[in-house]
Amino acid sequence: MLMVSCNSDTKKETHTNQVNTTINKAFNSKKNNWNGKLDELFTQEMAAQALGYSIADAKKEYRQIFDNPDTHDLSYIWEMGREKEMNIPHVGKMMMPTDDRIDLQWVKSTTLEDFKNSYRTPTAEELKNAEKAMQERAAQLQKEGKLTPEQAKMATNLGGTLGSDVSYDEVKNVGEYAVWNNKDKNISVFYKGLQFQLYVDVGDEATNKSKAITLAQKIINEKL
Image (cartoon, rainbow, N blue to C red; front, side, top):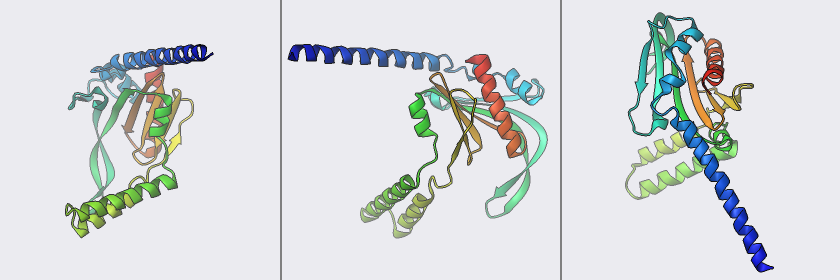
């Protein structure tokens, strides 16, 4: 009886390992398809067409500063003579020249569960625990002489605000799951084991959000 139970458990474990291996291979394959090729996943033509801009006038910036391809990002930029209100430290709000742009970043393999855990509004309890952890860490560093009382107080105050202004709204009918970041004004999308993030700045917030959603669906429809 014991032998049968052991054999059964072994088979279940083997089956689970096989399933996990298959899933991991699929994820890695999906990600590797676009390593070093973000400009193929999201082409200059796609960007220009979505905005109604000239392809020839676009400036492409493909940043691959670190070896990890998850950190690579791509931008398409147009100089359209637009001005944008910006909050300048010690000066206040001013109208400043700004380019129209689309940024693609955080293209990597993941699971739906991990994606949802990463892109969600923190709960009040989580914020409280984070603040407590920061207070305890700052107190410990001050005790060790690594922080002055002023620095410890600053760190504690910072810990009390981290994440408090972060919130996400689900975006329906885009990929398998998508959310809009209300703070950073970008869309993060999960589809078939792959995630990506789009930021669009071509006008007011409503226009930028609408364009980002349209572009996200365009990437899915044409490339994934």
